[in-house]
Amino acid sequence: MTSITRLGLVARPHASALAAMVEAAEWLTARGAAVVLAQEEAAAAATGARWPTAPRDAIAEDVEVVVAFGGDGTLLSAASAIVHSSHDVPVLGVHLGHLGFLTEVRRTELTDSLAAVLEGRTWTETRLLLEGRIERDGAVATTHIALNDIVITRERLSRLIEIDVSVNGEYVCQVRADGLIVATATGSTAYNLSAGGPVMHPAVDAVILTPIAPHTLTNRPIVLPADAAILLTPRMEDAGTDTVATFDGQFGAPMQHGDTVTIARANRVLRLLRTTSRTHFDMLREKLHWGN
Image: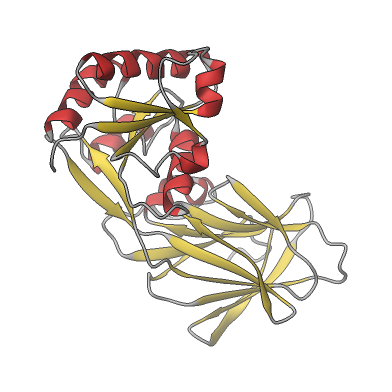
């Protein structure tokens, strides 16, 4: 990758993440790079007018890479801003959260990784994105893109939800469960894993349908081709339902009686910037104690 001279910085609203963001901004500025901070984070860190700012949802508009300081939630938020913008820029995650499968860089590696970015000693991994479309009364009510997963649940999880599932126009089954997860390989180590779904290598071009606590124990997760067109139709008795579709846990859309959710491969990908030689299997051993 070519050298980078303009970076956008976003952070989890927590003291350690904000401090790391400010440290990075100072380090980058001292080396001649231009830095743009997300507005809310700049205000929380009381940076004043030291660096230009932009709303988080516009942070990707005028930079070459976005650096996210925090956990996977912070990176997912940054990814959402990128994929809903007109600019295709990579994102680099600095791990300051809890599990952190997507945030590659450790706190102790921060300046080395930033130096690698400035000098172009990096590479990118492309990740599949899903586009979810809620249709209501023959029109599109909302469309959103997800990196990890799209989930349909009831807000009160003690109640079962019934969802008719079709794939490529073929009826599959009715799922009776607390909810249903449609996950990418990237999201296989997130909610999908907690619900008993399989771990998939991020290079696998596929999606997983995983019921959440299914009423029928034989209703197991299934892996589908990434190009599959998935149609989900929740069965709701009335318009006053508490059924909701969530995208990466970052955006929620309440559903109404008669709504359907269509899920398909998005027409773009997310690029994750890499600065270390750490592999997916290294992350599994480190984060999940896999194989120990």
